[in-house]
Length: 255
Image (spheres, rainbow, N blue to C red):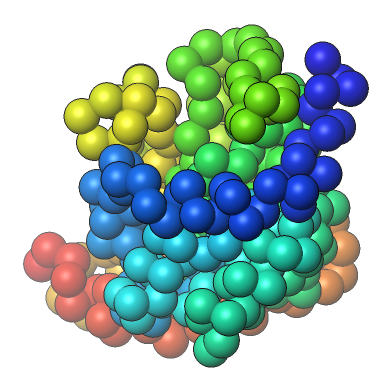
C-alpha cells in the first residue's frame, strides 16, 4: 500500500488539468458542509486550505464569502490555476505534512485531501493542525467511515485512500484542544457520501467575568504543544488580541 500512497503527489500533478476540468463540471454535492464551515467563522476570517487543488469550487466560494484564503497543494500546476483564479489570495506549493508557516489561522480545512495520506501520516497531521490553528479556530476535514486503506481509480490509475477509526479521530482532536461540533457518517444527503468532521477549539477552564456579572471563556490551543519560543510568543499575541475583544464577548453573556 505504501508504494501506491507515494504516487499521490505525482498523480495529481500529471492529471491536474483533467482533474480540474472534471471537478469544475461536476455537481457540487458537498456545498452545505462548506456553508456550515463558513457560517462558523467571523467576517474576513483567515483560512488555511490544505490540499486546495485548483481552487474551485471550495476556495473560490470562501473568497466570494469574504474570507482570506491561504491554499497549499503539492501540485505546481494546480497552484498555478489557483493563482490565476484568485490572484488576491495566497497559494503555496508544498506538502501539507511538512508545513511550518509562522502564523495561525481562524480556520483549517483538509477537504478531500487528508484521506490520501497513510494512517501514520494522518496521525502526524494533527500536529500540523495544532501549529496552524488560532485559539478560536474551526477545523473541518473528511475521512472514511472506519479504519482501513483502499485503492480506487482515476483515469485508469490507482488512487490511494485511507482512514482512521472514528474514536481515534475524536481522541486526536481532543489531544490538540478541539471538540467535535458536527459529525456525519457517509452523508449522502448533503456531503456526497463523505464522512465529515467539524470541530472547534475548546473553551479554557478559566472564565472572564464581566461588569454585569456574566462570564465567558476564551479558546486556547493545546499549550503543552507550544514547545518553541516562537510558538509561545505567537500564542501570547493571539490571546492578547482576544482579550481586546472581550467587551464584545462579555456583552453577549447572560447577566
